[in-house]
Amino acid sequence: ATPMLLFLVQHPRNRDYDLSSLRKLFFAGAPVTPIVFQQAIERFGNVFLHLFGTSETVGQATVLRREAVAKALEEGKTEILASCGKSFVDMQAEVVDEFDRRVAPGEVGEIRVRGLGVTKGYWNKPEETRKVFRNGWYYPLDLCRVDQDGFIYIVDRKKDMIITGGENVYPAEVENVLYEHPAVAQTAVIGVPDEKWGEAVTAFVVKKKGVEATAEDIIGFCRKHIAGYKTPKKIVFVDALPMSVSGKILKYKLREEAIR
Image 1 (cartoon, one colour):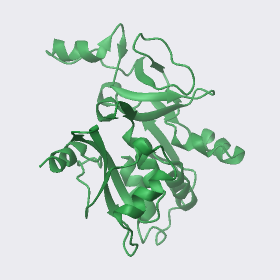
Image 2 (image 1 turned 60 degrees about the vertical axis):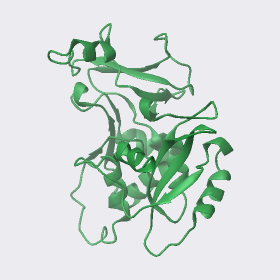
Image 3 (image 1 turned 135 degrees about the vertical axis):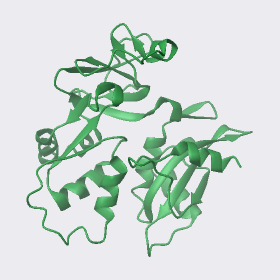
């Protein structure tokens, strides 16, 4: 999972081993920031393939290949490192609006997938099947955008989008900014019910060892890089974030903790 890539980059002994035989390393499960991806490449080489997929797509629907990564670095287009690539072999992935029309480059829509690796539905669960399988397409409920060259970018899970003061905030965008702060080792952003804003942008932060920063420092840093309504209203410092066995951050547990 993507968080494991961050752990590899930050591990204090990641240069103690001979990894010259490493050829390919696949990661998936969440967006990655270009800065973390670059750090991983600097340490381990251009061996990474970023996949997007689910169990329903047998694990892969799109892939950012090493050749695309090398070209992006050569041309200085580091923003492509945040992409999950293009359609995988024998798969078709596209980003559409609520009327199933392909979105224009830069616009946010919902990704849908079809192909040989996509299941037909859920066994004996017709209602659940109808929610995400329509007209031969599977809708994994992920918000994405596509660039001029056809590269797809995960924006966030549809259910994780925060609506604060009537504005849409994508947690991944805020997390990307937080990861640029020198004191932030790991972070997760959620929306917390709020009487004034509807939802308040709240960031849980694990600090790097030996690096100090206050909540005010981090909030001020965010204000310089993103719009005010996207800036966290609150920073919660924690020793660790709840993780699944596959390395994904369990945001529902953070929501439960935040509303106690």
